[in-house]
Length: 186
View 1 (cartoon, one colour):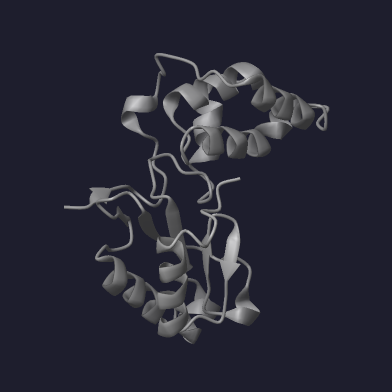
View 2 (tube, one colour):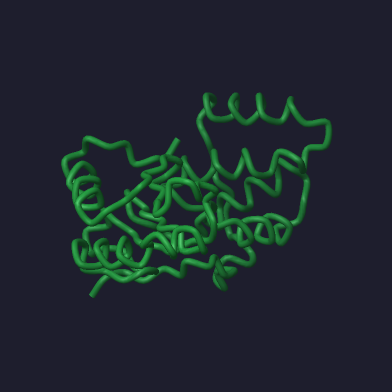
């Protein structure tokens, strides 16, 4: 059975009060400091810092990472979870190395997003909201990714794949499996 995760980012119940705080290398701390220096109000750095913590914590924002962010930004734990659960690009549960996010809104839907999702499901043996047993792929349907003129499309990490057909989906999955494509975690 494939591992389940919830694509709409609910507040992880076990994560309300983290028991530990993440610790990062001096290089990551320097990167955090560079971002903090850009914002006169520390809280304004929440999204860029979430991306850093997500990258460093294995592709998702875990409770120790949340505790770190709350401490660095001087905000409450719930402030971090409120932002994390609002944005689909912040994962609050583990996802596969390649997180295929298929746009499901109007332009993509009209242009065949359903066929893209079906092809991913067929190839990977998982449904939206699931991760393959080997942890290589997760599949999600997400709201508009802002590429309506090139619909249907999907995003892997921060990279867009547009004007998709079943053949293009197969090629992208093959390239992921061969390690040719980056996993998008930056």
